[in-house]
Length: 292
Image 1 (cartoon, rainbow, N blue to C red):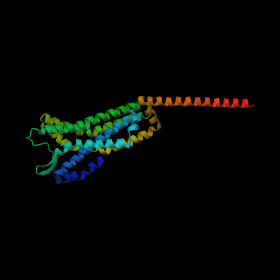
Image 2 (image 1 turned 120 degrees about the horizontal axis):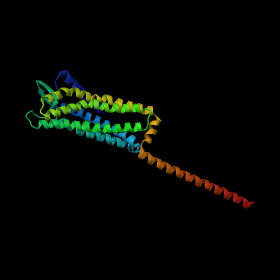
Image 3 (image 1 turned 60 degrees about the vertical axis):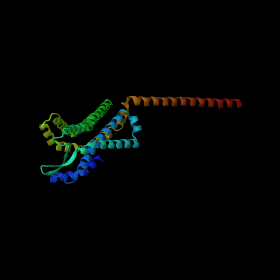
């Protein structure tokens, strides 16, 4: 859904690249960039949620099975989209149509050059994007997949090398696509903090390519998260689940204790049933002897 929304804005940006000017007005300018920002946040948050879901499945598989229901998943996904929509609101205020060297462009706008609060708005927007759109999600993703990798390696999978490669690919791919964009944000912030025209210019030149690279992650994510993950689980087969449950200490021990209780109870009932049968047989034998 996030990728489809981003694709819907493509014709407007393609027209801008072709003609060199923005002809769609202020509202479309703001909405196109709002939708792009919404898609960015939704994509990152969904990837983070998938990482947390896999962490839960490996760390607490029984709990995961209980909470992983359609109503719960729908509620979480709806909350993610709502959060992404709220996080994208600053984009509505920081994009506008301006005339630059005789051309009408849809560009970032944080106030006039003479406005003393302009630098504060620039710092706020790009720091906000970096913290909420990269630092926090990437930390969560890194922790979840590091835990998953260690747990699966400790379970002594025969395919642990493949597991390690997959985990590293997911982390590196996320960083590869989004780190340049966030570095450009930090360069821009540094330019404002130190009043450096060189840093401002460097960020302005690098931003289009870094932005394009960031949105290319939408093409790589399905391959890594669906096909690669699915192939690994299929190749591991039944041993995947068996060894996975062996690695879940607290929940597995609880499950084993419950199983032992039921087995002991079943054994006790069987013994009592055998005794009852023997008693019945003895009663019948005694009754027969009395009749004789």
